[in-house]
Length: 142
Image (cartoon, rainbow, N blue to C red):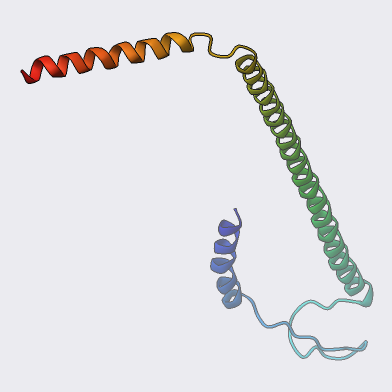
């Protein structure tokens, strides 16, 4: 939107320079002959124009400050929402880690309480496999 306005003003500004005359100000008293043709303004009319200009400037400043406050509020809301999301994810992550650590501790306790009761079978099986491999190698080499 700002690019459109900037482009519009760039196109319009040079056209208004060629279309308008340079403003001329000449103080006059009653009965003086005007040095150029134009519109004569009395002090009240000039004061009204100046007051209107100042009013528009102040109105623009108020609009800008209201816009700034609204944008600041929206930004703070978004930051607050993101912070709440981050806090929720941190809590969820910490809870998951705590649950996993408890599960690991529980499984380690189970392993410690129930040692390998079948170790004698593994030992016997290893000896038997060793004997069978030795016999197989001896028969294969004959």
